Length: 240
Ligand SMILES: Nc1ncnc2c1ncn2[C@@H]1O[C@H](COP(=O)(O)OP(=O)(O)O)[C@@H](O)[C@H]1O
Ligand SMILES: [Mg+2]
Image 1 (cartoon, rainbow, N blue to C red):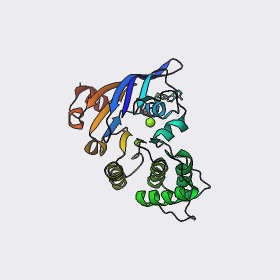
Image 2: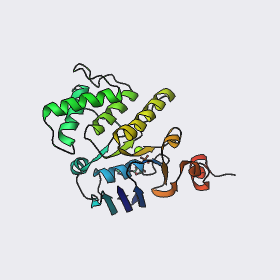
Image 3: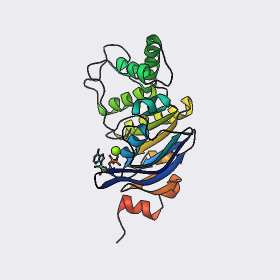
Image 4: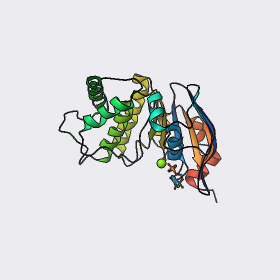
């Protein structure tokens, strides 16, 4: 479904993503992990069209998307959440989600359809859809749900989820992870899921890629990642 080849991103003299290649198969949940600053969000920004690559190719369903603007990538069927949620704070939750459905959708919908779809998505993620509910005063867990809702409202075939568990307690983490599992199994959406901690993610993903200093250092099964010397060194430090 997605083929990334030789992807690099340079910020001035600093290589944030260095010659990264990987593939994503339709229907899989791929984990993308690595310490803070290893290039995970930058990789998402390159795929989603928020940033332009310095080098490399990104093919989605066979077509090159590496230099497409973000709104075009979104309308082709790649949805993404942002690590730091920035909803329209003065709009209601349902307006936030309906806007995504109306303007970001993979197909054109009427206002009524966008509204209806937003309602369904809010139900799915467990947020209130009454027009009085706004993002004001929402905690981290709810804001992360809203991020997911806005991405899902565009009817993506591939979802890029950036740190959906960041800042959550363990109960909230289990719920959020369960939600991602449902999104894949019930909606048939392929997922790339970024976290900087291994934890719950390793139990759910089919495969995991590990980044360190912008380079891919591992690509394989979660059980193998847990015992891989380079991966354990990055996560636990070098053995004395
Ligand atoms: N727009 C930018 N300009 C300069 N440096 C950036 C920019 N975005 C990210 N970086 C740097 O690139 C590196 C990778 O960042 P990021 O992809 O956000 O890491 P991660 O998501 O893995 O924590 C970090 O050192 C970060 O400071
Ligand atoms: Mg990040």
